Image 1 (cartoon, rainbow, N blue to C red):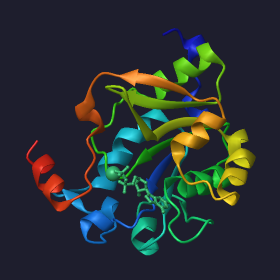
Image 2 (image 1 turned 45 degrees about the vertical axis):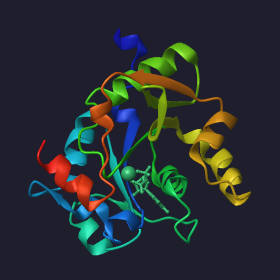
Image 3 (image 1 turned 60 degrees about the vertical axis):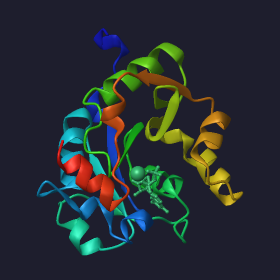
Length: 199
Ligand SMILES: Nc1nc2c(ncn2[C@@H]2O[C@H](COP(=O)(O)OP(=O)(O)O)[C@@H](O)[C@H]2O)c(=O)[nH]1
Ligand SMILES: [Mg+2]
């Protein structure tokens, strides 16, 4: 893809979504759990860093530990663990760049060309939000979106909306196909942690 179709990385804030309850992981703060001796969040940040400019962490618990990453940590404003969109909202509020790229803390193998491919598709389509899709299934926590969508997201959350896909439809998002399903493997349970640690 020629450079003309690329958003400069400096214009994209990378948001690590780590605000969940980790219910299926026995209530652990999932990003802080080690996979093969390295916290999953560290692995995700390592992959995210070259794809973006500024980085932000969205977390709601163990804030002292999260601050050890030396990155700004933002917590949900829509309380009560309202789901990933509350994290996206907190990220949009805190970011100062035109674009935000979201990735979850439990997917250590996500594509290293995620930002590049989502950005290229946005440039061609003129849409304001692009989301990854693989084998026909949306991967909604992997999205590149404009900061100007903040009022729309705020209205959606205030109206009780929680589902990512529904809001994406409202803003006319586009889906971008990726081939490698293994790249989107995410670790939600102790069994998955053990399985993927052997990879
Ligand atoms: N800020 C915030 N993030 C959340 C919340 N619930 C889940 N997440 C994040 O959303 C992502 C996906 O959550 P997960 O429980 O793994 O759901 P999955 O899509 O079924 O794998 C993870 O990065 C979580 O940290 C929430 O209430 N608030
Ligand atoms: Mg998950």
